[in-house]
Structure formats: structure tokens, C-alpha cells
Length: 160
Image (tube, rainbow, N blue to C red; front, side):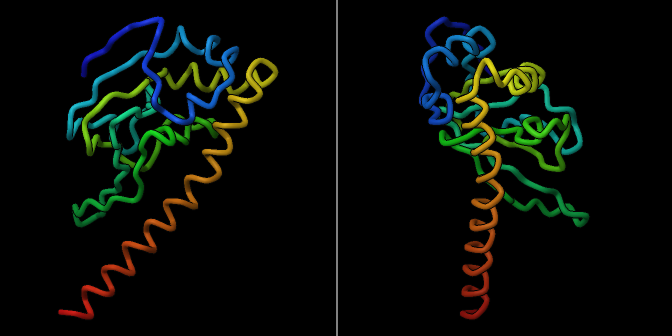
């Protein structure tokens, strides 16, 4: 993974781009642009999440590994959001594995800093609101994706 430090990050991530300038400037020293190659594992299930990622052009798959060894994609994260939602709820780990599906750039921030910034709500109200809104909506979106995939599978099975 290539890391580029720059005071002027290329922000294409919609979550970060929606921040007011004051909040963005407060977070800027803790953000870094990274290049994510295809198939890179950002973390494995049950590992401590060291960094959260805000994809610019990359697409990150969230997968679970079944007891049979089968890998099932349960979510995707693109430029609309971030990885590591459990960090927003105070967690350090997740039951999911995060894998880069489509290579590209992302902004990364330490999970510890994100937790700290979310507890300082008086300093970043809009940022906290945006992150919490994303945290609330993402599970619903993932459920819709799962339902769509299941309905397609049922349709395919009907043709076989």
C-alpha cells in the first residue's frame, strides 16, 4: 500500500467532502491518502481495526467466512462511506473481513483518532452527525443488497 502525506488531500469521498471546512481542517493532520491494490486485506475478522478507510475511488468488500470456508460478501463500501463502522460504536474488532475489490485511492485515519473525535462532539458536530447517519443507514443498505442478491439467486435457481 502506498501512503502519500499531503496537506491538500484529494477528497472524493462524499462523507468527508460533506464536512464543513472547520471540521475538515481539524481532521486533516490525521488523514493520509493511500493507494489500495486489488485483493489487499485491510483487516481480517476478529482482528483489531487499526485504521478506518474513506474510499475515494476504491471499492471495498466486506465479507464473512462461513464454517464451510465459503466467502460471502455482505456489504460494499465506496466513495459514499467508510469502513470500520464498529469503531463508531466503540468497538475495536468486527466479525467481517475487509478486502479491496476495485483498486484505487482512499483516505485513512487511525481508528483511535476517529473514536476520540467522535467523543469530542462539541468540536465537530456536523462530522459526528454525518458519521452517525452513515452508521445508521449502512446496515439497512446492506440488508437491501442481500435481499436483491437472494432474489437473483432464487430467479437463477428457477431457470436451472
